[in-house]
Structure formats: structure tokens, C-alpha cells
Image (cartoon, rainbow, N blue to C red):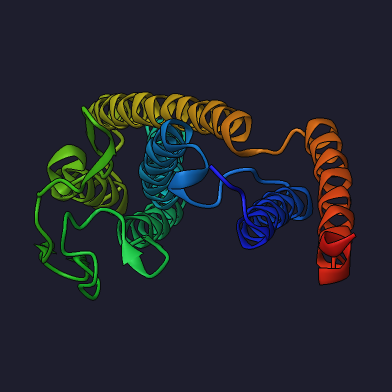
Length: 295
């Protein structure tokens, strides 16, 4: 088959364009540091990288949920610890009040301290985190869910609910992150504190039973604290696992997507040499005239 000048020219131009395309691709890889920009660059690696990216995004959603939930759990832990400390203070006052050497004025002073403890207990029960009530169930926006009037006949009101706040931290991990009034039994707690206050006000030295009652309340609060501590530990462990998983996935993605700079630069230099050679060859052919054929 006779090869015409036109065919040779088209062939050289195609070669030049192909070489230029490869150079542009290599230049983009070198400048961006990534060898994958579209599926055609490497279909298998591109699909695998997209899968890893989806997993990382899903893990990031779980991590955001963990960050929000950890604040609630830690604030609840602190609130329960504060309640237990207040009950321990009340137990100490009851122990002092059981001393036969105390006068009516002394017990009246202790009763006023118990009133202060009751007020602080109510403050802790109405505690908030980020503007949301901690111990009101799912009615976190309600105003003062716990109310207790101890001025005359004790009156307890709870305006929240006992529903659990459940958060998803993984494919198969759902946890309740809140403490409810059903767990705390705030009415019983405040009623027992009120009874201790009343006996102190009436100068009753026989209040040893109140010491045992404070111990019962404290034991329940410690059980709640242990439960929250377990939840905190599980969430923390899950956070570590998700963070490590994302680090590994990012490493795998980097192996698939990142440019091997040394190889890319070497290939680019080779393509540039070939490109310049093609340009030189084409210029020589383009200079061929009719007189060259006549000679």
C-alpha cells in the first residue's frame, strides 16, 4: 500500500496529540499529587477508593454522634456525682444530729443546712448540658422538669418523662445515653431529705434511721454512676476504633490515589523527549517540497 504524504502527516499529528495528552495527564498528577481524577484513570482503583471514601463518611457520622453524646454522658456523670456528694453531706448532718449532746438550736441549724442541700439537689436534678435538661427523659427543652415545694406540706412535681435517648454509634451499636427520673427516684430522695429536716426541726435525737436511708440513696446513685461509666467506656472504645478505622482507610486510599512522584517525573521526562522528537520529525516532513520529489 502506498503511503501518502497526507497519511504520514496525520499519523505524526496523532502521535503528537497522544504524547501531549499523556504529558498533560502526568503533569496533572504531579501538580495535584493524585493519580486518580476520573474512573478512566484506573477503573478498579477508582471504584475501591470510592468504597473507602463512603466508609470514611459513614464513620465520620458516627464520630459526630459520639462527640455530641459524650457531652451528655459526661455531664450526667458529673450531675450524679454531685447528687451523691450532697447525700453524703446530708448523712453527715444526720450523724451530727443523732448526738444526744446537741441542743434544739443546734438541730435547727442542721435543719437549715439540710434545706440548703435540698435546694442544691433540686438544682442538680434540673441540670442542663448545651441548653438541654439531663434528667428529663426526651423532654429536654421543658422548663424546670423537677419541682419540690417544702415550705409546708411537701409537694413533688415531675414534668418530664422516663424515655431513653438512644444514639447509634455503629452498624450494630445503639446505646441509651441518658439517666431518667425512674433511675434516680427524685421524689423519694427529696421526701427522705425533707423527713430528716423535719425531725431535726422538732429536736428529735432518734434519727439514726435517716443515716441508713441516706446510705440507700447513695448506693442507688453509685449504681447509676457505674452504669453511666460503662456507657462512657463503650462510647470511648468505639470512638477509638472508628478513628483507627478511618486512619487505615485513609492510608489505603492514599495508596490507591497518590502519585508516585519519582515514577511520574521520569515518565513525564520520557514523554517530553518523545514529544520534542515528534515535533522535530513533523517539522522536517512539513518542509518537504515538490522539488524534493522531482530531484
